[in-house]
Length: 132
Image (cartoon, rainbow, N blue to C red):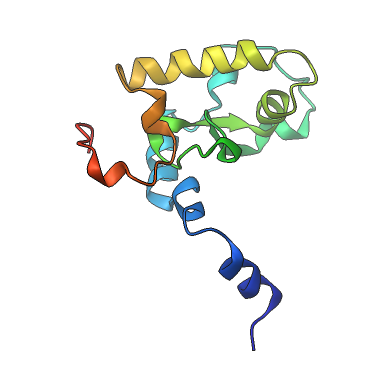
């Protein structure tokens, strides 16, 4: 007999595991970003000092999971909960600007890495990947 969670996991498409950041990728991203939010590092629309989300850190996807963004370091960065919510919710009107900054940051770290390689592709095993 399965628990609800086990049943839910069995019903999920097999590709979803590729969209999550592994512990190895999370560690590599944190080290690369010096354990600090990429937006806080440049002082972008800083939250109030008492904002709780400022001290909580997430690993953010540049191309979101909902668009089949992979859980790889070339598609992720450290973000405080405040900035992560600001970017994901987009209600402040800053999403486009934040995504531009996020992309520019990734481009510095991984020049010439195309967005197509940041997305899940069922047939990617047929393609040569120079970054592996």
